[in-house]
Image (tube, rainbow, N blue to C red; front, side):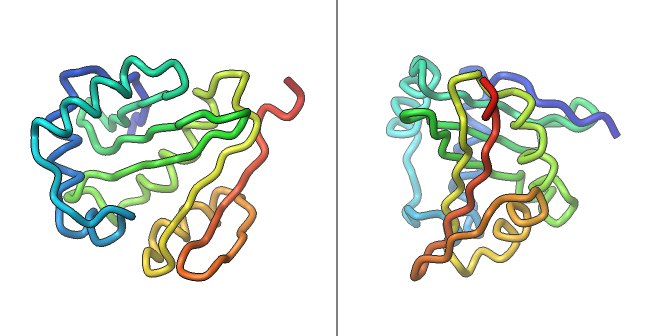
Amino acid sequence: MGVILRKASFEDAKIILEWRNDRVTRENSFSKDIIDYETHIKWFASKLEDENCFMYMMESDEETVGQIRIDRVNGFGEISYMIAPAKRGMGYGKKILSLIENNLPDKVECLLGLVENQNGASKKCFEDNGYSVFPGGEITCFAKIVNADK
């Protein structure tokens, strides 16, 4: 199975919105509301133009199976990712977190993931990829040093 990351493009906006509005995705997101098309397109276009945002699509055998975004702030890169609803439970969450480490700009020194505690699958993906765990109430923070020598 050939799994790669490619930079996201405006053509990916529709599938990302579909995945984002999926019921299970919303249950595991900080924002539980359904997002309308117009709001999403404005947000998506701004993220593609943001020099501190790095967004990728994961493909497996030329099928799009996931999306990951890193928002960089002061050397930290906050992770947000989704796996296509039909592809959950197949190891893609763990794989996308592993792949992003090889696609980071030098200015990201530490990756952070914030996960609601009920999202056991995402928590396991971070743990399996060697992230340090920092519990905090209803949210767990995961952190991993990358590019420490740069």
